Image: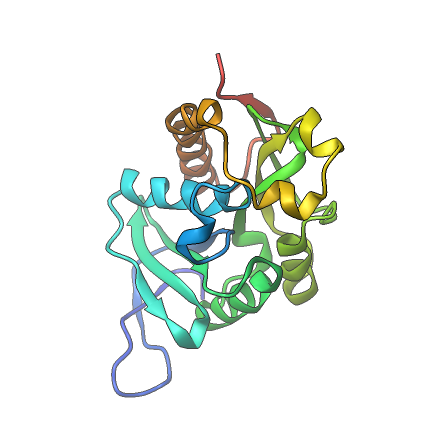
Length: 212
């Protein structure tokens, strides 16, 4: 039922519930695990999710091997927010998202995915619910597992550079020093978008710029 809240697991494998919250949502930040991927374009989802966790003072990340992710749970307003970073590689992100959504019984319409997008210029953030993967392998993996009716927070990484380079090499390259200086502004915008999503229950369909 919508107003039930899960308690931490005990010795039994079956989830327990208590009365309380009206809703549970999942926010999944996409990226690749490993220090070699730090500050790469493809890890902007991880970075934004870490920032959101700090902003709302989530508990420390817990490694959940059975759910193939790092996970933290926190209550914002009357919404339980399950924050995850898949421990699979990017191309298998859906394996984690489907496990977490099944365990917490969250429908795809109550899942938000934060990820990089080469079709959007660096400096823009766009929001959308539903749609195709547009060549993003992590998003494609999630669509295969749970369908396409989830929310997306798309962080632009596009530039003239990527049009003339191998896409894999481009997304796995590190952000330039100039781009890195905008990360705090970018994270501030995404924190605002996700907070609005939690309280409104929907994303605002708009384009936002964090570079001024």
